Length: 108
Image 1 (spheres, rainbow, N blue to C red):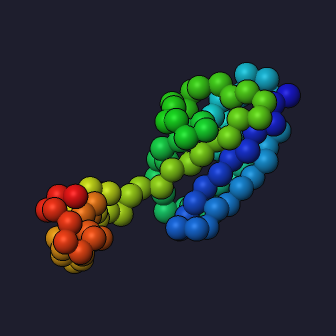
Image 2 (cartoon, rainbow, N blue to C red):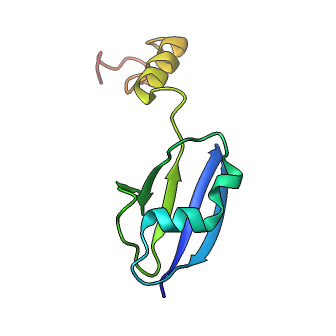
């Protein structure tokens, strides 16, 4: 009888966790449904799921000790967020060469 942990993060630095005992041959979908996750996130239609940080299909069987993760949608593309932070800081204040020693050659 596999025992798995189901995790969901509704917001940054907030994690909800459920430990579920499942029958043999149970799938990721069975684990998510048995956890009661739907009560914590009623507005999410079809969640993306994964086991130990790797995305998988809902039909994948679970093993004892698996960590099933329910992923939320990203609000901002990480590449766009990085570009915005860099633009706000300015090219002189950010990046690899921002803390140059006085008198050092350019680029070092």
